[in-house]
Length: 145
Image (cartoon, rainbow, N blue to C red):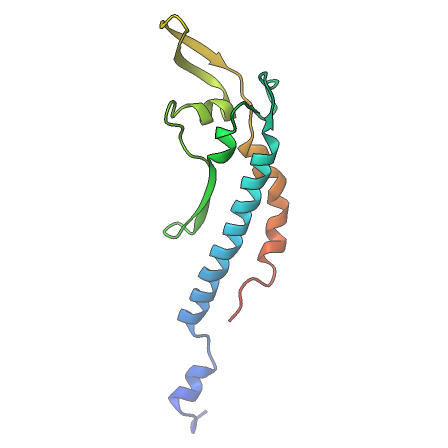
């Protein structure tokens, strides 16, 4: 390699900036698709019905607000995707209570404040688990130069 120029030698190695850029673009694309899949699955799991759903199954939708508030977004800083319901104006704690269950203070029809216990009606966790097997196929051949 005595007679080889520096530019020629440089072209024989990875262009680190180009490779990192291709990986970043692929990551954003793959995780955004995954976020869309999970959001769609979660939305479809919430059925419209009058009564409450049985504990352990996805929640019922009475007016469709919860379904409309499920979003996803790619976090460029962490290179990750965030998927889930936006907080409801009336109750920031409603989506986590539906997903995990728990206790929260609520007002009765008479205006009194009481502590209520909610059983979990998970919808995001099951949607994530259902879509997780698709990730390897999404990554396959995703980084292109």
